[in-house]
Length: 511
Ligand code: SF4
Ligand code: SF4
Image (cartoon, rainbow, N blue to C red; front, top):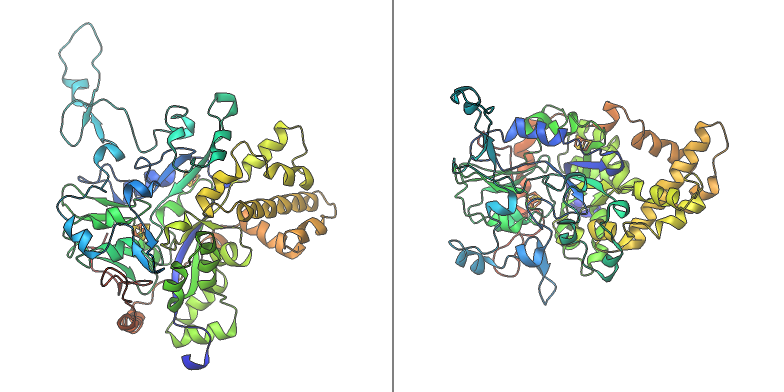
């Protein structure tokens, strides 16, 4: 169908991720295997493309969520136009040589190695030799006082967790860090491969780019001049400077594996089997408008509104017209990410208020609800008990809302209730009883939905969790033809919205 007759604009496809936080056990396998693959090199010792944080906590780098301090992401100017929080082009150019909004190594941590040689070369003496820590940056003896997962399992509370930027409302007084009152969950993080990536728009050298064919955001190492504007602009602080090369590096979404139809390393090795990879089709013409949605709490729906139903014949026709290959359309129809994000709406984006339209989404943890029911002597399988508990969690609903819905507690509460109804229904079914269809209906699910969602969330096999079509390199040039119409003028100069710098398959030097 010619585009003029369709209500669907320019269709693009992105490989996206969902993580089910209830299943994360905080084992850090994802972080370690990612590090072994991508950052086990001189210059990026301190960099964790994937890290796992304990929440509440201040995270890595410290308090990265405090955008008043770090100036990451986008904001709206007085005329409602999207502008980088780090300022327009002039301001950014003026801070090229002195950028106050840049984390320093102490905000991450000083990487250390150990003086292993001393174990075998120390002279004989009355005491056993020890391997003292040494900074890998200076070679000098180092005190280990902080690390990328220093707060692991609430190890940093109550000393540090109170500094979590999400604990900023009056309700935060409800959060207790005494041992018997604490609660934690793990938050694995990687680059969000955003639809509206601030890092790309901030780069003065045009080195950061978002791939046309699958939406992966990369750094062209040949073009990078080390200006570090991307580090400031990324609100998730997921761009790192290699101190040996002076260039930016970031999560590559394991693009060589994705191109071969394989999951990312962090997904492949995830012990909790909580990661999902799949395609999302979206209307590229509506990205800028969605990111500029005036009310922060409407950004979630605005971003969902950009995603397209891969089963809709009009979408399929528009996708074909945009050059999306047939096997990719089939993969989009089987995408677990589309089901969790858009069909069942149980996955939520991390900090939608940053306006980058992140593409790694999270199913929020139900565990705090169930713990609250148990402590109150209630029945975890009784929806009435659990629904009531949702509103009086030890970690207030406001905290989860601060992470995932720009403070909208109704939306997070609604997702938790949906998961609760699902759990209750499937427990009854698995015991051979009739499930409570009315409770399901109250949260917008049918019995068939519940079985499908249970299959996805509880017992999904490898092939259900990772639906990644292999790359079509032969089509990359044709898809790249859309590049000419993409950049949009914005306040502060030529800052592009939506899909700022779309480029074809990267050169070998991308990271
Ligand atoms: S999360 Fe990734 S794509 Fe988004 S702004 Fe940061 S580095 Fe760029
Ligand atoms: S490997 Fe999986 S379960 Fe382990 S910390 Fe990473 S995301 Fe969580």
